[in-house]
Length: 198
Ligand code: HEC
Image (cartoon, rainbow, N blue to C red; front, side):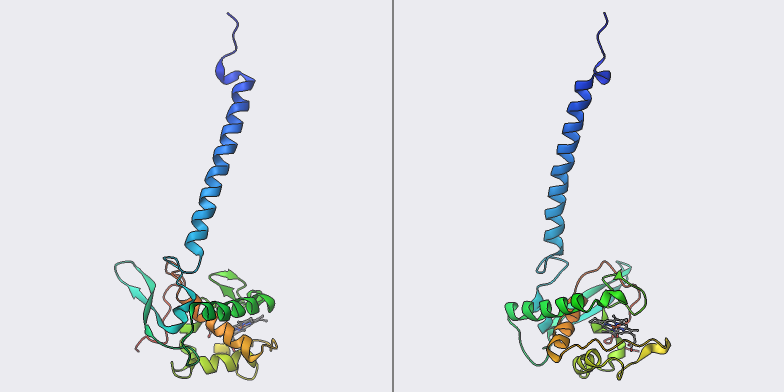
């Protein structure tokens, strides 16, 4: 009796390799589609682009030990009610502008990027925009002329002029408003919004 045991046979390991590879591939495909459905606009955590027509807040929930986005009633952006398609166009213009001008070279978006300048995930809700009435105009002015309108927050760092047009700046503001509505699982932590009372 000189038979090779199963675990020592070459064909067993070949078959195992094929099954493991094929199985992992299927799991990868399933996970890819699962991630796509969870990260696309209009899903549970990522609201549709027309959320830019709404009031957005980010409130701490004691039971969850983290802040969650709270979508409220109508709060128009630039005095206009956007259809889903118009909202998507404007947000995409803003997104493409942030890519073309490489904002991530200094900022983080959803935690990704560089740490030279503030994270922009909830920049729409930053207290630095003085009041909700002035916010969108201040943001557009700032983006078009960041050196002149620098706030620096005591850091002495200034954002350089990136030649952003008014149209692009409005797109960026829409993009930032939309991004602030994303459920980021509590990131950034302990962020006090412009809506918070002193
Ligand atoms: C060279 C580095 C640099 C680049 C590139 C840059 N920024 Fe900034 N940004 C800064 C610095 C520094 C500040 C903080 C100083 C200030 O507010 O005056 C800032 C502040 C901001 C703020 C205010 C943040 C807040 O929470 O109130 C916004 C919004 C912003 N940047 C958007 C952008 C966008 C959009 C882009 C790309 C189009 C961009 N930045 C590219 C350096 C940069």
